[in-house]
Length: 395
Image 1: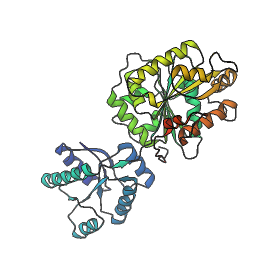
Image 2: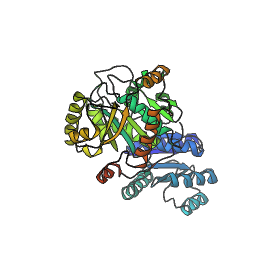
Image 3: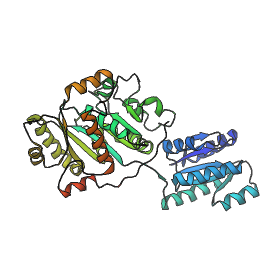
Image 4: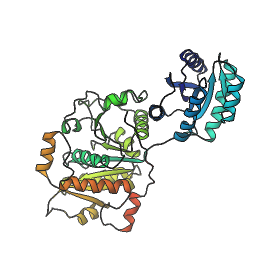
């Protein structure tokens, strides 16, 4: 079914068109705007709904032309169908001059409506609309519970968000032991569970209620413990599609239990940051998880991050790499006092602290595709995925 939005200051005309489209069973109307929206609102609507078709009322010719020009830049391939109360010859000529080949007038008779829909379908098959989506998606996967994955996910996400014009979403998908709500002292009662439940209906009005905004970082916490929750793959895919259209970077804090929804999230990820500590239990489970991920063809996306490193660790970086067969791209020191100070304050670690500066450099390397540590040339392959960034607006 085609996804569509209607822009029409004539409310009655929009209602009649929506009713006619519903009867066809071929088009879903995802949003109706009763005015010609300013650019910022139109961007939000396009990113929230990713329509295939725009039904645009040409009663105000100049404003409709502005909308059309803007849409062509924002969503190449989006099909535009002109609508009007009458089949006005002047309006019809003007829409044709602008390159619009479909024109519908009240009373929206079914044969004419179906002709336009079928023509649009043919155009979409040849050239689907392109709604910009970020490729900067990172999953944080603990080798075992208690290795500090949530702390790293929070501080690296915050570091990414400090980059100019970079809007970041941090989502806590550890649904049994999620820490983000506690770490940031969040009061929002809405959570990942609500986002998943409404994944097929999320729009630019609902989303700001679900997240908590802290500077350029939006946080979606895990909510209350719910071990019986089932999340379907379609829900995750729909939710991630929405997220990718509206943020420059996404960070997922996972439980490490390799649930089906976690596997879906890792399939969507550009990089999987496997967090380990230089201890035998952690490294043993890290190797087991790498073996498991290999079966899903995900091993090439994995980068190991070693946390809580002492000056004289039980295992060196080289030994860990030999054991796991995957590069250790970053080593973070053990800063018990700094982490607890930030936790008590309900915020991330000071950006000017040692770990804060390390997170900043690591975030820069992730986004700019540079090697984080001095590694053999083959490591560059791990950071070679093409990058397209949006410039999302705050909803």
